Amino acid sequence: MPSNDNPKANSKIVFREESEGALLFDPDTGMVKVLNDTGKLIWANLDGKTSQDSLVEKIKKAFDISDEKKIREDLDKFLVDLRKMKFV
Image (cartoon, rainbow, N blue to C red; front, top):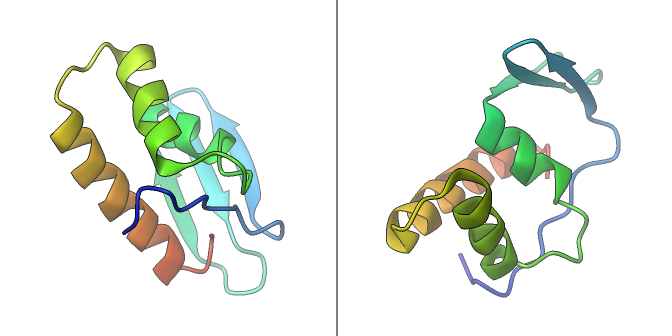
């Protein structure tokens, strides 16, 4: 996935914060995705303006992670899953 991609959340998806993480729900399909704190941070920044490079930096800062390669791999997998579910 290109690092200059600016993913945007599907506006139909319902976001619900829970005590430990959050849920994404598609009312059209009934599909649900459970998010941890990293997923919540990513979802909050899927505005169509924030690049994947920026998301990597935000994750590095928020969670004090230095392994940028691992962050990129995990971010790519997460976004692929969201795209498959049509959440993005």
